[in-house]
Amino acid sequence: MQKQLVVNLTTLRCAYFEDGKLIKEYPVGIGKLATPTPPGTYQVVEKLVFNEMGDIDLGSRRLVLSADKTCLHGSWQGPVEGRVSGGCVRMYNKDIEELFPKVEIGTPVVMLSR
Image: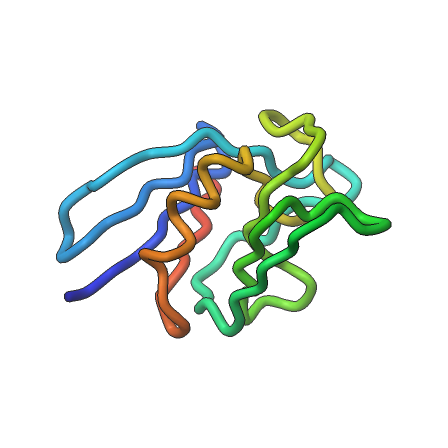
């Protein structure tokens, strides 16, 4: 089964696809103007689980991408939607927890700026 994530940096949505079929769409936050989320095509290279909040709010799950310092992660405290991050794609914890087990290492992630 071919899986893919498409993050639309304009509409602030992350779409999860299986075999080209849209399975679910999630609202997201992206980088602030000073720290924009980079458009492009990447891959998931690591999956991390956090059981408690650390110094930086990465939520309970993190999908690390092949882009330098870019990932999809949850948020314990928000805000989530809008231009709110340091360059990552921020999701509600409940959403990243739902998506996390479906996504594998190597899954393509496309960041669209249109």
